[in-house]
Image 1 (cartoon, rainbow, N blue to C red):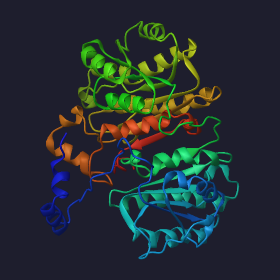
Image 2: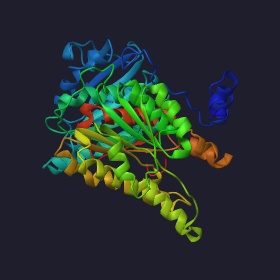
Image 3: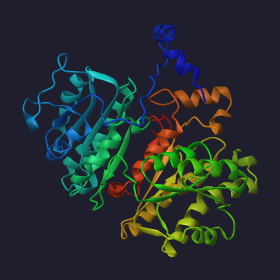
Image 4: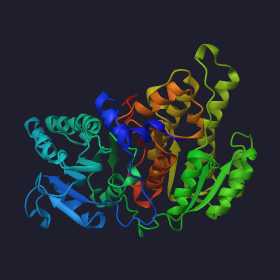
Length: 451
């Protein structure tokens, strides 16, 4: 779907007019392209006092060859100075050592000069410790304050940039590489203002050019849109893909499967025997399950029919639960597997005329949160990705005024692309991402809804 306002705002005449009128000025986001050598294309600045900065410094050379510190010679790096150093593409700040209220000013002292030296589409990651794991009440409060800071900074950074907060658990320091490869790269283009918790995980990626090599992945609702983008991205990262969709989509499904070297599986996931069909179709089992299939049947609650309500609950919520349970019971989901559920910001913030859809997507988030402890005993992670306004055939059918509002009501003033959701799913699917489980990652440009 073509965003004409985005194109106009990035033209020579458009930039002048948008600036003069004070209108939103969205910048075209940088996204991952094949053949890219390193996650960060430019200078990275590391700051803050604490053990997490030291852990991060050990992987910086794998991210970019232009690394700087906030102090001369720290970690063997040169100091970056505002007005003299190169434009910054990435910032990593270790806030885990902040334990007193008066120490919070360290955030201003680091970021204020750095913000003046940002390049386009910069990435910011703040590292901390989970407040609930800290006994000292003031220290816990200080760490909780990081959430308000990073979410506000995400709305101020502009220039197509984004900001994330990561609470790193004890023993999880060696998982920072995979997380930084995602959050500091164009793969996280439409992710901002998010808070993630990183735990210890024995699994690690062996080959970053093909992090999913040797893995078999199932993607439901895979014939088009977000589902097709997910299948393409998982295949790009080395996975063998099994693509599932309804029988009427068989032609498109088989065409995509042939292009990706995968298998097509046409079936109705709400059928009474769907679980049996799926188990029988997967004799070798799976390493990755992505529940993307979903439908909308929008009406206000006063006009909501039984059919509209039940159809959405069956497809969006019951089917993922039933099929995943069947795979587990049949031993088809391997140890250290990855389950990714596609939710929605509607399930977080609600939406007019979508009580059924919002309930189903909130339930999906509940599946991720409540299944995580039990699945973790087998090393299996389960997470939810909650897209905001994504440019698809579904959003193209929205009336113009609502479509424009959906595009602009986020910190990036534009809609996301199916690739943005797919990149988040592919990250959750990686071996090392077992360090993250029971969590929800919004891919919404830091939407103002439910932010």
